Length: 224
Image (tube, rainbow, N blue to C red; front, top):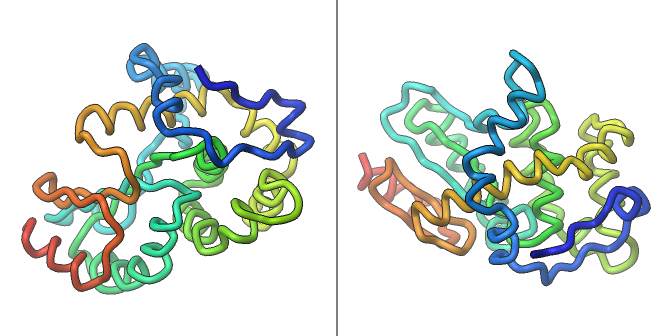
């Protein structure tokens, strides 16, 4: 069972190991968390839905084609897709109403898990922009040479409007962490993939690989 940083370590910006394995994260989640994590967060908010666990998606809800992406916020291949392909996907396919695009967190290390927690705690309408900003600047926070990745992440969250106190509470929130890991486990068990990014086009085509826009658009057409 992996050891997550305690609150004091997180607040003081202890360096998070990049070698934290995806498999150990999946084991942490466990079968019980898959069944109970969502309910626990919902109950914690009373009758109000906790927006941290609601779907993160873009596009026309009635679009005939649904594309889902499972990604990790420290993944260089996810970053390449986010920087080079996703802008064209958004412009040509999402904004035009051709597809509904659904984001799924699939953290491949501990820092990516914490980043996903932070992204989900921001207002839902800021999720996509914040995630893209993280992926486009991995060298300035996730793989920073001098200093703490966690402190760098905290600064980026502040730029996105998250107070420092909220950040500290977020990264210490075990229920939110368990929800994200439970969703990850469920996806891995259901679709049998273990790399990022992974895409599913209308539940017909599955691709575990970065791709250019032409390849992406072809998969959209083939899945329609």
